[in-house]
Image (cartoon, rainbow, N blue to C red; front, side, top):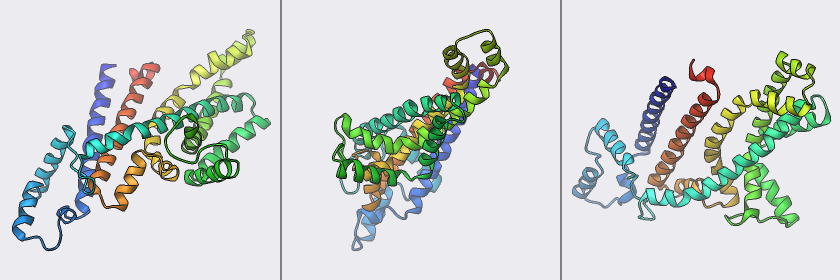
Length: 305
């Protein structure tokens, strides 16, 4: 287990290095950041002094290490328009995105797993067809279209649920469905495939021949052995929902990181956009590492392989 942990830690550190390099390079490709803080009438002396303050007079490699050192201590710069530390701005929006991603994740698991089990057990039936249609629609329909249609039908026409903003439980229903439908469809297909493979295995047939109850065969023997792949998918889904929340938050005017990133793009506030990217990528890497550890704990073949 320690050897597996060490390997995953090394690969995670390599991923962090690559991600920070990509973010640093993309930030430099946007142009000279001094143009965002100054006007065209600025004197050359002030322009050079600002470059020295931002470390732009140093080689790129040195600038990268300055960037890493600041990120390590939580210094992501200041917002051009709000004149506040980016770390504080992003941290203030993080809870709203975390709550929405958690709601979408719960929807994907609570709907996808039971639907996958039911579809596998009722193979070839109407339930199986309905489950597969649910999965296909989740992957085929864009999340923003689903969100707009739900707002139009459920909120505007039927006046059953609120259309936007963070609030009580009813505010989470439409955004969590729009965000988690595709993940629920993927979870359903994965659980169905794994369950079908296990249900056709010899030890399950032997259990049935011994007179084991149907419920015990499904949940104790089949689902328990088929859950490893869906478990990995569920963990990676949680990281992906943070990124996917950008579109959903924009449609529902949800005050999270996604809406913050969109506003940063429209206002050219690149420091805030860079901070959001760093938070999202680091969270995704952390979730991936945690999923690897859980997977190794659950499956000794991975742990000792």
